[in-house]
Length: 231
Ligand code: CA
Image (tube, rainbow, N blue to C red; front, side):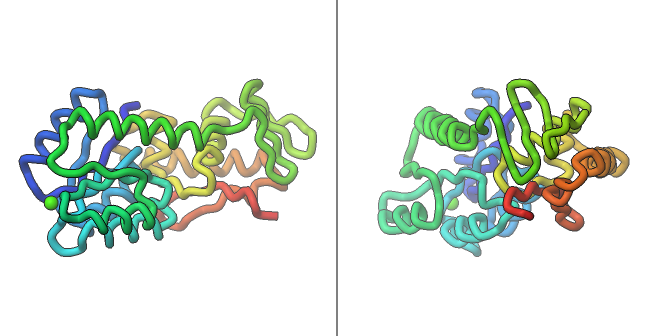
């Protein structure tokens, strides 16, 4: 699957230039021109990374960054800020708010893409799962693709295993049904009947996980998350 990049910028020329260059590098760019749309798009599309211009009409980039980092559904998405030279202090505030990097305008697309790849690499490295994952009585062995609950082997289908692994892999982040469908089933634009596929698989997964089923938390009207702390 191609990584989605959400571009938040109101200057059309820059958006066009970025879309063109990200596409050329094999990414799937999405773009919005203001903060409210940025928050909606981030929740809905769960992009791999957000390019956020600080100079936006209405809600400014720093407010957008803060809102993204305060929302559980988007807090784990890395952010690269676009700043102007005169916004030196905003840059620091942005990094304190949780942005991952910044690029000063004017910039070359090549530089921004290199930074994007570096941030994505860093995030993946950080999110790497250990070979064996444990939570309560649940043990997942990723190298053997086996799951145990209370030392008893649990037979999962390939999709159920992928689903569990994906939920665990994002470390507590909430994943939407659309995201799961896109990533596990490869449905890009899910229709109603397909989104129910996720619920059906979650149901059978919970049944099989027995006492550890409680770790898969339903987020109403949205999706699911895995809770490692639950006991
Ligand atoms: Ca702008």
